[in-house]
Structures are given as C-alpha cells and as structure tokens.
Image (cartoon, rainbow, N blue to C red; front, side, top):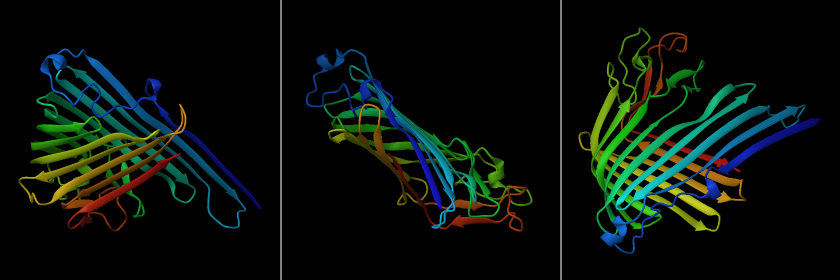
Length: 323
C-alpha cells in the first residue's frame, strides 16, 4: 500500500510596497472640515493589494480507503488605488479570480472565475459627506458549463453575461474605514453577447438569457443602489474587507431587492505569506434561465431546445480558503 500526497502552495503575497493595504479614506481627516486646509492638500496616491496562487496535487496508488488523484490551481488578485487632492477623491478597486480542477473521472472543470472593477469619484461637501459618482463592471474570463448534464451544457462566457452599473448619489464616510454610498438614480445594464444562449434546438431565438429578451443584447434597469463598504484592520495583522450592494429596480417589482455580499479576510503571517478567506454571496429575485439546452454538439442528446428556469430567485454562495 502506498500513498503519495503532494501539495504545493504559492500563497498570498502583498503586491504593494511595504505590504500596505489601502485605507477606506486615506488622506482624509473626518474630524474637521476646514476648506483652506483641505484645498491645500497636495495630490496623493495610495495603492495596495493582495494576490495569491494555490497549486495542489494528490496522487493515490493502491490506497485502500479509495479516492482518486487530482490537480487544482486557483489564483486571485485584489488591488486598490486611491487618489486624493484637496476636496477630490478617486477610489478604484479590481478583483480577479480564476481556478481549475482536474480529476481522472471528471476531467478539467472550472472552479472559480471573476472579473470585478469599481471606480468612484467623490467631492467633499462636509465633514463626512461627499457628492459621488460610481461605476462598476463585472463578468468572467472563460466559458462556463453546467456539469450536471451529460454532456456538459454551455451556460456563459465573457460578456455573456456582463454587468455594467452607473450611478450618482452621496457617500457618507463617518470613519476612515467605513463608507456608505446612497444613490437614488442608478442604472444597471445586463449584457449577453452570445446568441447561442437565446436559441432552442431548432436555432430559433426564443429563450430569455439572464433577464435579456431574445433578439436583444441588453437589459436596462433604473433604480436605487446602496453600497456599504468596510475596510479595517480588526487586530494586528488581521484585516477584513466587506462590501454589501443592494439594488432595487424602480420599474419592475421594486420590493424585490438584489443582494451582493463580498467578504475578504486576510491574516498576515509574515512579509510574503498570508492566509485568506473569501466569501461571495449573490441573491437576485427575478426569473433567470439557470440551465440551458442549445442546438449543436453542446446540447445533450434528446434534450435540445429545452430550457429550465428558476421561478423566483437564485442564490450563489461561494467560500474560498487560501492558506
């Protein structure tokens, strides 16, 4: 009997000089509001982030407990850049993630895929309030599949779907590590640039894809957006970043609120290594096509042109640990 388990981890390394994370409001003192001193503040950039690559391999030979070998890789990058000058603030953030897993029985499957970009401009009005503009974009890098069908079913790719949000409102920043963005005028667009997601087995454009109607590539929503953001070192070498986004569509069932919640907990071990826990939850209360059957070789035999939908909402809850 022989068992060989090899795990190699290239773990979360800070990407900024001095391993410095970006404070939520670096460069702003919220205890006073003196226009002369604020306007005299020189331009300042503060940058920081965290990234990591995890590679793991398991090899089993004549192992009585059973199981099979596997190979997995997962990469993530979070980066912040904050610019301040006088009463002006420009806060930017990107979040990238991608992961693959391979086993003998299942082959190679995608386990993680994320693109998120956010940019906010703020003009300071008072000690804790800013007039703000916010833009966000999210999508994925590679094609996504539903592996519960045999063969697998194609479901998504870059910009299918893609999400773009633009809003104007106010930001309340009572502490340097916390801010609340309130927008009564927010637009959100859902893009689907792949006609295969709309087609049935005969090639007709009949299916709704991620809320986008057949024959169209964009679903527009106008509503209110609330974002709560926390970026704080809760104890020495232990830092938490949390972002909660709420969106209500004025034009379609405004009582149904879409929720996105992202949490990143980072524990610094030394200058180069840290342990990271990521949680990403998403809840949308609208009808979406969760599984999809399309024509051609990607469609399961005997099930072409059949669409399955969730009747009310869907929930995605993803945990990830890098140590």
